[in-house]
Image (cartoon, rainbow, N blue to C red; front, side, top):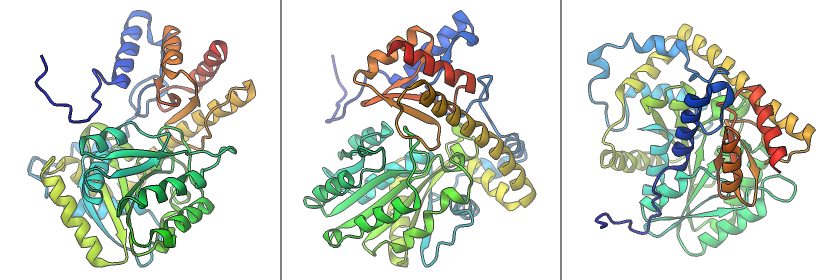
Length: 408
């Protein structure tokens, strides 16, 4: 007997990523961790398989006083957190004439949910690439929207502007409000990244006269930005947002869960950018309303902790140095995987940086299962498989390549 309503949502019996992760853990218990490669985890692990957590951050957690972290946080976030998270997101970027507003969210996921809720209507289509983080789709379904995709890569392995523009204009002819979910740098799941020239081309398309009657929200998911490369370089696109037309609102989805290795504290933010103060204030009002009626308010301890880090430059430098060491470890893994795959003749999806590398395949589920039989666990997607280089060592990266070559 069924009592619950699916309401046009596709609700799986179980989450495939967590199921694969549990299978990997069970095999580790039986055969030992030296015989298992768990490439399913979307969190950064040390080479020994333990969660990479910044000690400079956790040291400060124990200094928070109960009367500070136990109190309810304001719906939109504490004032000191908002100030700190804007600094974290923008870094040293000159944001020009753009004004901004911050609304706290439970990780990057909450930011996406609020963007869909407030910048599209029921039945609207939301646009993202054909390689995407699976919850983009379920978040849209949950709110009565439909996710549409364009082809991320052209025949040269570069950003497919033609497909992007065609898909965007097709949606624009049928609905006034447009929401674009753009994940860069360190795209999840491919590790792709738009460079400055590509950003200029993207902005040119969105600024087109063909879209001047539409209201456009450009949501930039930067969840992995602080592990994508040199902090200033990976933020070079931010000042370019000054060039967007007035009918376009930029929203940055920022995950403190990733940046500060605070996955379980569920701390993040959505930050809007626009030249018009009225648009910025409207963003704050509508997103706080959605927050109040979904999760009410966010984890105050995470907010107070991040504010504390940014209030002391000495502590912040320690955090940045420790993060750099983790970032360098991740970047080395990506380079090893990419170069070894190229050396062995294994073709992977274009990769720049990030937690994951992907490979196209006609039957991802079957390939994933064959790898699992060898003690290698990866995630099957619609167009191929996703390997978490964030959770495996450099040596294991090579073993995955060798196993793929053997199977293929």
